Image: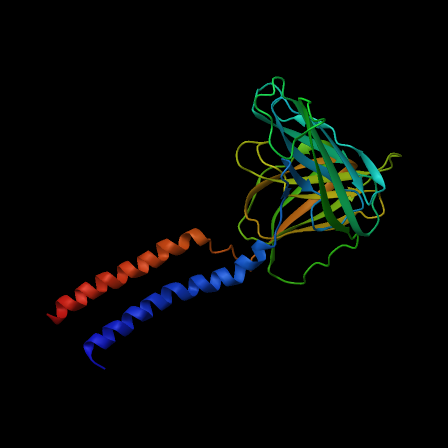
Length: 313
């Protein structure tokens, strides 16, 4: 093999070393992350955070959403589950003292107890506005209420399917689960301290002491990313447990790492939460790093080629 062929072979070998690890990381981890859904957005401006298309391990869940209300638009939102349970969705302005072209409203409804199995949630959105002078009529889906009317309405119907399964997932038997921290407290409303997860798969093992109260026992925990501004982020996972039949459980969280805190709303005597992470789970090799690594490999090849050509001369 002559010198030119040796040099060409070396170039291809370096590029191979750079590209193959990148491809392996993306094939291994990107597919699992693509399946994770934190919310569902609809054309009406409605974004639903729960319930979404997933399985919940409690018979009691909350309808949690936001709605972008345009300036001058009147609106009403209603829901129904399995065409049986239905009601209105009260909305509260996220920034009530500020004037926005689109004001973000938040809605939270405690849904009735749901049986194990498949369910469907239907959200009906009705918006209306008045085009006082008729000069700039709104576009679709708004339609006039009558041919010569300046009153316009628009409606949307959104459907979400989800599953209830109250059988708790089994804990993996593995030495790879390492405790990060233990959080404990009593009933009431409060936030936990911030903790940091270095691996992407982790879990919360929880236990409660219900007490001897006559009212229904509740243990609600909402997990938030710690961005430094509390209230600026939407919670992405939750424990929503009611009753006294089960006093322990586990919440598995996949494809998330970083710093987090939890809001706890509990009508119990006390609780304990053990946060553990799987040290075998590796963060995804992010796609934005691919180009810099490729360019670095090409740069190394160019430098080596110049040195080789110079030495041959």
